[in-house]
Length: 89
Picture: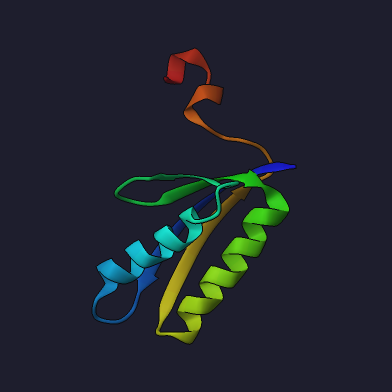
């Protein structure tokens, strides 16, 4: 099943910008996940189980190496701009 995850990371330590960049770059290493980044959040698109496995690993990495809070929205389908009704594009 294809899924969409919108994720925001809030680092609770100094150097937060680099920690967010590092997290996104680690997720991007998986070529089976499409990653779109904007100023407020990051969207991930891919197979549900793969997304969850990657997020589980990468979030744990940050939990073990500092303090961070992650906010996620998860949908059981691909929610991209291409899938929006024309009136909303």
